Image 1: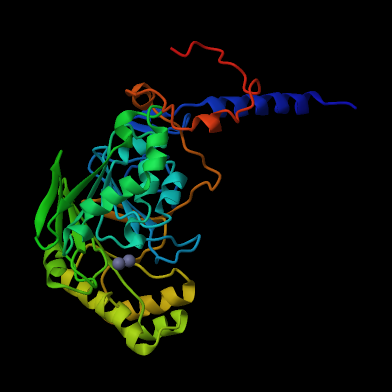
Image 2 (image 1 turned 180 degrees about the vertical axis):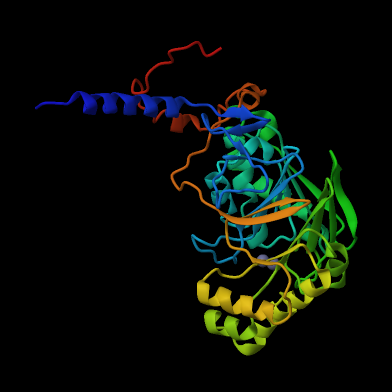
Length: 404
Ligand SMILES: [Zn+2]
Ligand SMILES: [Zn+2]
């Protein structure tokens, strides 16, 4: 068999690419870890590419990038996971608003810098808003976070229904997991810290480095649901958790730049797609959520630079009907957000696009701080003696480097 020189060269070159990719560490560009070899470009004169490819654009110093990670329902689909919005600021900080089930898949696709993802603002404790907190706690720790994960969330009617107890239970539920990893990963990254605040008050609950997050009450089935407003550098982002239209939202969101609010189904749609009887369908769509025409009326009052609707299935027929409902009562700037809708915000421009990411993407790797962060000793003595005796000796190669 003859092998041409070209084929042989291609093969050798392919092996080289494979081996360098396997060993690659991320590059640090302006304080961000990006996949090795990728050089983000500066965007000039608001001339954005039609599609956003993660880690290919430099965020301007005075710019905010908002990515809808998930915009759907608790019963998610591969194209429509549960609620979560990522806000990235030109000062290098990142904020997560809700982290519903499935949202961490999107972070992986975005090849996110996990060392930056250490803050989650939880609107309420439904799984479609916080279902992936444990996944980020552990996955992010393994992926590059060497500091604690901070979760800011509301109190409830009783202490047991508040964020602190919720996080305490997550810590307890995952004791097997987290204590088994202790010592192999950076110590501090294994911590999860709850910052519980009074759900009933309008108050600044985060104020650091020029970034202010205000919480205000929402009405959603029971006490303990809130919405948030983030202010930074003259730009504002409002994230509405689940709620019927309320006066606090109308006041706090008034005139803000990007205003995200839930936009649910009509009772008739909900009966049709979910099989609910009318009474229950009306309760769910109109007494604990906001149906399309109500979303439109609320935005007509708020008058944001960009209104963003979420919390419906992105099935085309349903989405179009919801859009038509909104347009009966609101004719201002509107984005019917889908998973991976991305919005770049500056004082003079709002750019709405879609993210395209590589479904084969792998975690990009960890940075130097993670690699050298303090660690304890790997957990030993956690398996019973009789169990250890079941080990077949001599199959695992001995260490090739000193262990101390
Ligand atoms: Zn929800
Ligand atoms: Zn909810």
